[in-house]
Image 1 (tube, chains in turn purple, yellow):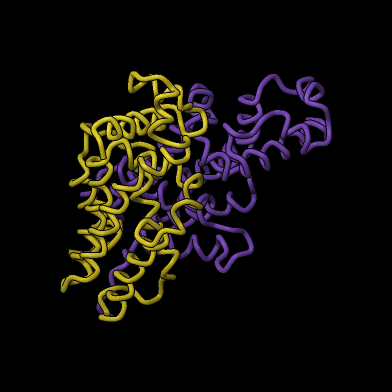
Image 2 (cartoon, chains in turn red, brown):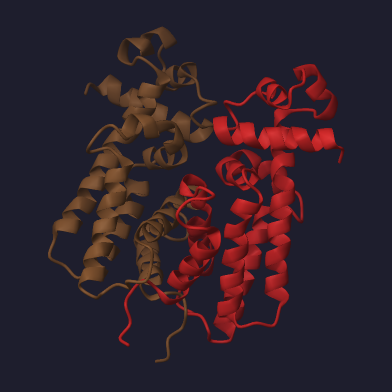
Length: 192
Length: 192
């Protein structure tokens, strides 16, 4: 990828994050890069393609990280802690691309679901594997619905796109520890 | 509110849910009602006002329900179970208004935050009160960050707008029991 292409993708991520995908125009994105709209179309074919380019790299990186965690020989507790950490850290590492990904997923789903490595259902399945491994070894509860529990964890993590600000009171490492602990052990106090 | 006004709000909820707020036009909404766009403007002043009218009633109902729960003399566990149930049930009872509310909240926040009963920060504070009560009585863990834990519960619940379908495999009552149990006790198996 050329430097100019990288600049365009970074500008698109910024504009989509600030304005939302529907309100953003390729004119806005060209202006952010400092080029003409016609020049932008030399590099990309549509706003839809740009949305795809913004999210592709960060989600493949996250999904691959979680696939490594699935394959590792580790207790389920550690796997869940590491996978939640990878998910939350992606909001920092791929800012604002991950924010755009979560907010605009309904506009992206048709493009992504046909691709093996980039399909959100791949990610859902990786999480189901982590939980199934834990149920099989007796580490995790067997009475919870598997897909609903994965959506629960996705919801906890993805909701960061609505409230988390980099450099704020809590960093993603702290949040990941708290969320993993709350998901694994619950928020109820235990007799000591 | 007249029958025609109710029809317009229901049509707006349907169109916003299907197309998204930005892509939807007042022309689409007028067509859904079966009236001219000019006639629609006799009833409402803007698309923004319609978005506000779509979400106002369901969120005030939900927030008021949770306020009653905060005031009740009940164990924290029961309060959390009931409040999660109220939140998830709202997705059914106010379909598709609640789906629109969650998806379009970034477009609504400036309108809502100035109003006392309708402000999302009122809801956030009610949930913080439930958790604080539980920490004060020793029923809930004191080591978790309060606002982050409320966002965690909001994320679990609000994520339904992306995957939950009424009449699907799991109803909101079942989901509420599972989510309350997972949030309170964690997903780790306990020695029996």
